[in-house]
Amino acid sequence: MDVHFVDTTFRDGSQSLWASGLRSGMIAATAQAMDRAGFDVIEVPVGGIYFKKFIRDLKENPWDMARTVAKLMPNTVKSCMTPGVIHPFEAPPPRSIVELFYTRLVETGALNRAQFTCNTFGQIKGAFPWIIPLFRNLGAQISLALSYTISPRHTDEYYAQKTREILAFKPDSIYLKDQGGLLTVDRLRTLLPLIVQNANGVPVELHSHCTTGLAPLVYLEALSLGVDTLHTAVPPLANGSSQPSVFNVASNARLLGHTPRVDEGILRPVAERLTAMAMQEQLPIGVPLEYDYAQYIHQVPGGVISNLRHQLAEMRILDRLDEVLEESVQVRRELGYPIMITPHSQFMVTQSAINVATGERYKVVIDELILFAQGVYGEDSGYTWMDPNLKDRLLGMPRAKELRELGARQHRDIPLQDIRDQLGGPGVSDEEFLLRYIMKGRDEIEAMHAAGPPRQYFNAAMPLLTLIQELDKHRKVRYVQVRRGSDSVLIRNRA
Image (cartoon, rainbow, N blue to C red; front, side):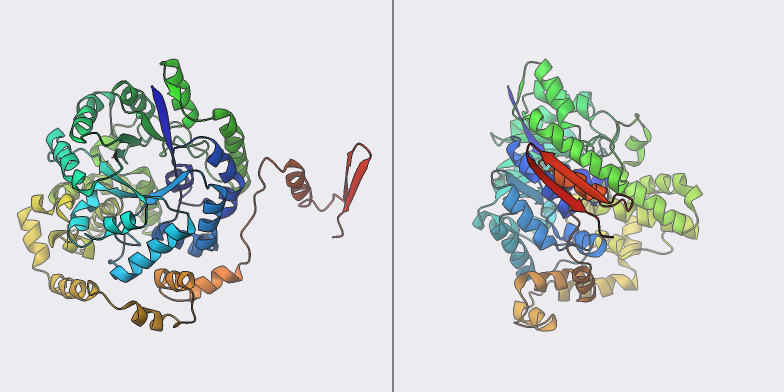
C-alpha cells in the first residue's frame, strides 16, 4: 500500500514545540525542499492566531510570509486550521471581515485546503453556515476533523454519528484528530474502522500527537486498518508534544511492506537545517516522551500545560499545579465534557486555576463559561450535558444578560466600509486593513514595520554564504579569502 503524508512541521509542529515561534526566514530556507519531497499536503501558519504571533512577538509581516509560502511551495497543497472566526479566543468578527481575510489568503496562493475541527460543527451549522461554501467557491479543498477525546458521551456511536453528519458538507477528506495523543492501539481498532465505514468512501486521515509516546504505534496500526494518509513532522519539530517523525513512520511503514510516498533523502538536509536553526535560536528539539497516564485523566494538551505553568508562576502558586489539573477534571465534567482542544482546553484550566487560587469554586467566573451555558459554542461543546445546578447559576448571573446583549450586537453584519473608515479609510490596502483589524489598531503594526526586514536563515544550497555570514559575527576575523581554481575572492571585515 502507498503511504501518503500530510506535513505539520511549519504549523502544528511549531505550535506544539516552539510556541509558534517558527520565523518566516526559517520557512524560506526550507520550503523549496519541502515542496519537492512529495507531501500530499503541507500545513502552513496562515490563520489569524498565527498572524498575531508574527506581528506581536516575531515582528514580521505575516502577509510577506504567506507570499513566501506560495512562491516557494507552488506544487504542494497548503493547509491550515480555518475556523469560522479569525481568532479562537475572541468574539466572531463580522462575516465581511472573515470573507475578506480568507479570500485574500487563497488569492495569494498560500492556502488551498481549509481544515475544521469537530468542536466547531455546531457553530458552522449555526452562526457560520456560509464558511464552508466560501472556501468551496474559492476553489479550496475541505478537510473536516473528528477530534478525539475520552468521556462518557464520546462513544463509538458518537463518532459514527458525527461522521455521517459531516458528509452533508461534502468534505474532500475526513481526519481523526487526536490532539491530546490519547489514542491507543486497542482503541483505534474499534474506532477507526467505524469512521471509515461511515465515511462512505471519503478518504480518511489520521492526526495524532506524541504526548503519551504511543502515536508512532497507533500510526502503524492505522496502516494495517487501511488508512494510508498520516500527519507527521520533520525533526526537530517532531516528537515531544508534536506529531511523529516522518522518518520514523516512513521507515517502519517500509519494513511492514508499504511504500512511503515521500522522499526522505530530500528531507534529511531539511531536518539538519532546522536543527541548526533550533540550536542557533535556543529553541527546543523534540524528543520522544515517557508514557504518562496522567494525560488520560486531565487530558490537557502539552502546550496548554506549559502556558499554565507560566501563569501559575506569575500568580505565585506554581506549587499548586497538580491541584489545578485535578480541578480541571471536575470542571470539565460539570461543563458536559467539552473536547480538550483550543480554545476549550484553555477555558477549562483558566477557570480551574481561578477556583484553586480563590479557594471557592466559581466565586469568580470567566465569561467563556457563561457562554458555554448559553450554548454559544454549539452542541459539540457539551452544554446540553452540563450540570443543571451550575448551568442555572451561570445563566442567573447579571453578566449573562450583558453577554447575551453583547453577542446580539456582535453578530450584526457591520458594513465593511464602516469598519474601514474606523481603521484608516479607503487609502489603506486590504492587507494593512486586515492587520489593523486583527491587532485592534495600528500600534503593534507600526512596531512590526519599525523592526525592519525579517531575519534570514540561508538554506543548505548556499553553504558558502552561510559560512561567511557566521564568520562575520566574530570581530577577530579580519578577512575571508575563498579560492576555486584560478578564481579568488577576498572579503575584508572593516569593523
